[in-house]
Length: 346
Image (cartoon, rainbow, N blue to C red; front, side, top):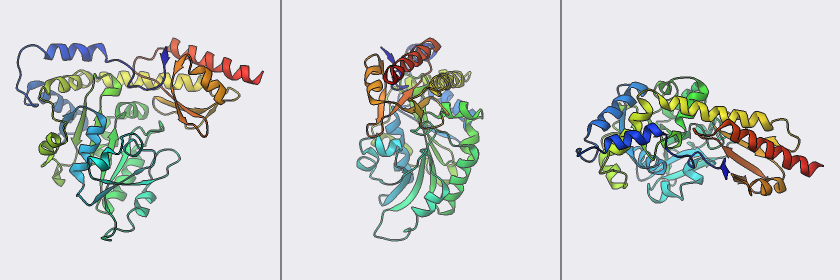
């Protein structure tokens, strides 16, 4: 069965697998005090600036919760989109495990704007409400849209003006950079992001993420070693997490893989854009395509292709492309969509 369900369905890139196998030779100091971890941090600093401090973790939810815990007091709150992964797809972990209240707002395209920050901080100083201390944005968003450099900078300015920090959930950070055709630091470090969840899993890793502190002057890194351990995210054999980052970052393999995933999504969107009965609901910018089509067409397509219904009320579906999605797979899927919607209109 061909799958357009999630870029998590894709396997690991062969170079990543080879890097992990190479790191398996002999003994190495545990808990991240190894040469692979040093090299990976140096490569992250090459991409994000010499001040960047990386803490490798197992998964995206762990990275996000750890970042929130580092930035927020027990009475703290986080401003995010209603559709954010933090809010919709982490089983309440930010609040249950992180102990951080989420302040959410509707966003038609998945992106916060400075007015959202202004509106959701109107009770700062009120002891009866959890206090906003962090703004969290996803890049790319859960709706497949991408913040421009200017949009990130405007949010950073709005957050900082209120004394808040800016966190970026970068589960699909490489796809966003490829879509914008800018260096990773352009819309992170240089745009005022304070801390980052750097995702590698969706761009060809076996399973590796990192929390990266981008602004050392705020002291966010001071408690990170302890919080990472307490949050169950400290790998004893840390070299295997770091080796995956080395493989993806050393020759910027991540850019090649992310660009391919984005190109496959663009190919899919172009293939269905003008089909009667199919409506693209978001402008495809990264490696996701959102569309509405008749429920019967969705049902029949899902018998042959795996993908998610995003909104059962409206019939909106999500089609994801990955680093290993092939043009022939996309073309076969487009042909099947055309046939199903055509059959219903006949």
